[in-house]
Image (tube, rainbow, N blue to C red):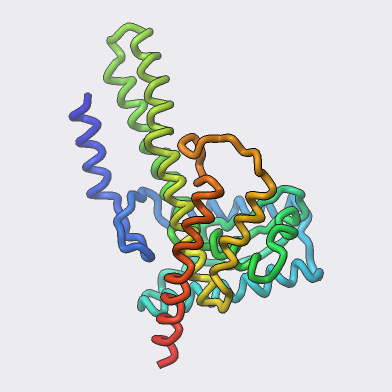
Amino acid sequence: MKKTVLFLGVFLFLTQCKVNQFTGKKTLQIYGNKTVLPQAFKAYDDFITTNKVIRNTTASDQIQHVGKKITRAAEAYFEYKQNLSYLDDYAWEYNLVEDKAINAWCMPGGKIVFYTGIMDIAKSEAGIAAIMGHEVAHALANHGAQRMSAGTIQQGLGILGAKLLENEPEKKRDLFLKAYGIGSNVAGILPFSRGHENEADIIGMQLMAIAGYDPAEAASLWERMQAQSPNSKTPQILSTHPSHQTRISNLRKNAPQALAQAQQIKDSLNQ
């Protein structure tokens, strides 16, 4: 069984990897834009038609304004990398939706939603840029497709393990499935998700810096986020996100580099 699982893992890594355009690292990704984007666009359209979109207010205008600046920043980044065609399938859209939840997200392909509940924490245009840069970074780095891939592999390996144990006693099969479910989440899926959050933080700061915002605002934003849930007790190891303090520390540490990289990109494009 171990040899079979190892062979499958190596095969998938060698045949289904794509290079992350920001880190240069290979990342397992089974699903491409032709599969992911139509699903994402449909889900977005369904969401927009069933929720109250806020238009023609100061807040909604800010979302539009910052969204366009972050889009131009993404275009500048890929122009700098001589890979502007990377964004060919993107269909950017920015909406503010009435909802008290403290949340914002970006679908694969550039479909962005801010909830009204997060605007008080954003506080300023720079705060909006910090949130939007982070969410857009998830889309640009194909984190959605990677999570789908990881989920598919997790499910597939579970089925394979159960199949290999089909002649074993039911108690042994049940024990395997429970142990695999917990182990694959704690040791695989959750660290994978936290890695995506860290990556989106770094990329997001770079995007907001290219757009003309101070990336140091990202740490300030998360300090305000932390103040909203000061008593959160979920251990980081059991969470899809880094702890607030870990995130704030990483943002502070990497802000100067994001600013320097953004300046390098702008200088290069202005030559």
